[in-house]
Image 1: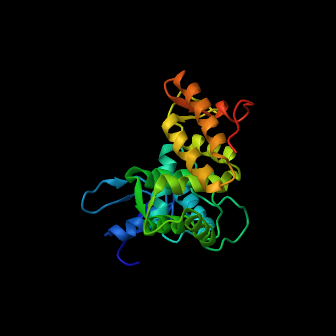
Image 2: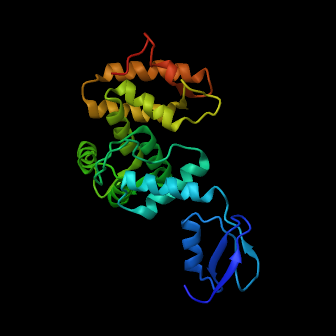
Image 3: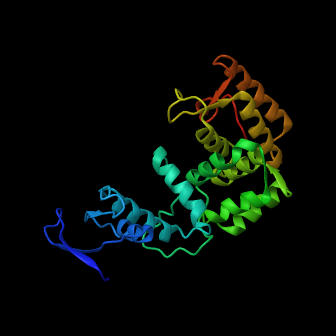
Length: 254
């Protein structure tokens, strides 16, 4: 650098060689490098204060991005910092000390939750939109193809059906799939783990859809399950709980 002022850094007690004119890009370099040195912007004369937590946040973000290898970094960064602000699980591959090949991550409840929060609002979404988000999260392409095939989805699809099949992949059985669905969709803040709740209408749609896809659950069994849980729901403002079916001898989902 040229044309530098020779100053004493108040924080460091050592000499700083900083340019008189600091561009916006150069300021970003100082921030990204985690410098705690104070410097003055020439057009205002005011010191720029770097928050002490910023270097740590940027360092962890960089490590998580390298570990996850998202296809769309900006899309993934939006999800990452939104989850960080809201105190939710970060969309990060947690496998330690392993080089991750892009688009090989497995689907997890946390990742499916992130996708649901992003896509559920419109009800119907495009296959292209789902695929873009899926790949931005580094998920395996073969699993996406499998879900698309099982659901017989075209260019446009019902998100709630895709979501249900994602829960089925996580759970392996209809009971476990519905448990995952209720945990992700929990619509009652008073319903605390290990319980979770959804409206009876939501439960009926998800369960009926998964049972139809499974093809091994008889219509009589589906009807008995729905009738029993509808009666349970009427006693508590139309809500179905995980505890209503997960360990109950009175109802068998599949």
